[in-house]
Image (cartoon, rainbow, N blue to C red; front, side, top):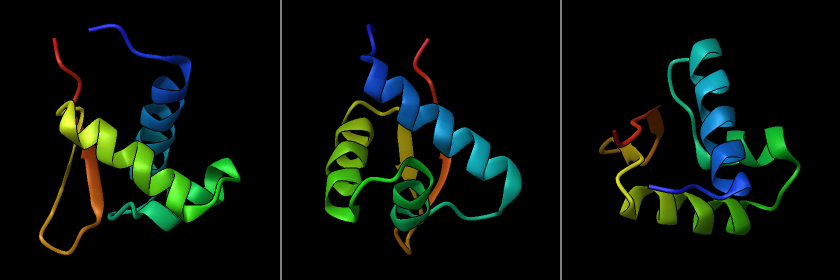
Length: 68
């Protein structure tokens, strides 16, 4: 699967945030990247549909999962 630079940036940011805190939320990603929460939510939805990330029951982004 070919990823865009933007998708790679999101995944890297989630990975770094996950190494620093237990739960990673869309607002955390937005703050780290300097983007609006709606923009980040849209991008994260796309990553979730591609099964690159998953969400727990509370909606927190907890981990990244890369397709092989």
